[in-house]
Image (cartoon, rainbow, N blue to C red; front, side):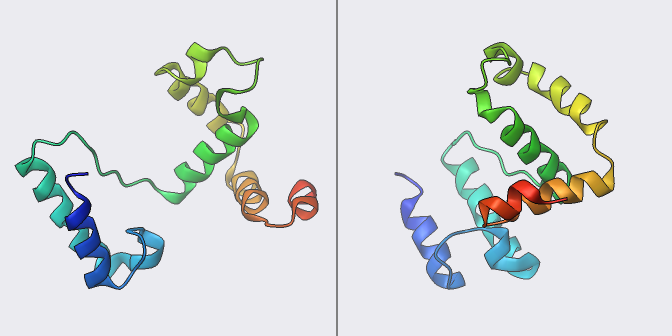
Length: 119
């Protein structure tokens, strides 16, 4: 892997096992910008995205309910093409803020029985 030395160096210098915002926090996250420069220099095709937590919760809910493409009731092309975004928008209208928080709480619950009963 071309970027492996850089990734190892970044993880070591930041004192983390993985480059994740949850571990780095906002202040140290900006140091990962070195990856963007490396990517441009080596003509790598990659993206760095910023997803807001409410949007992430909605995407996770969609993945959980529709079983990430394993649910036979949802055609492949609805889930693994840009049609997925239409599905996301439709599901977004079903969840108000309170329901989205409950869905996130259920997803994060480590005890399956409590997760099934959340809400």
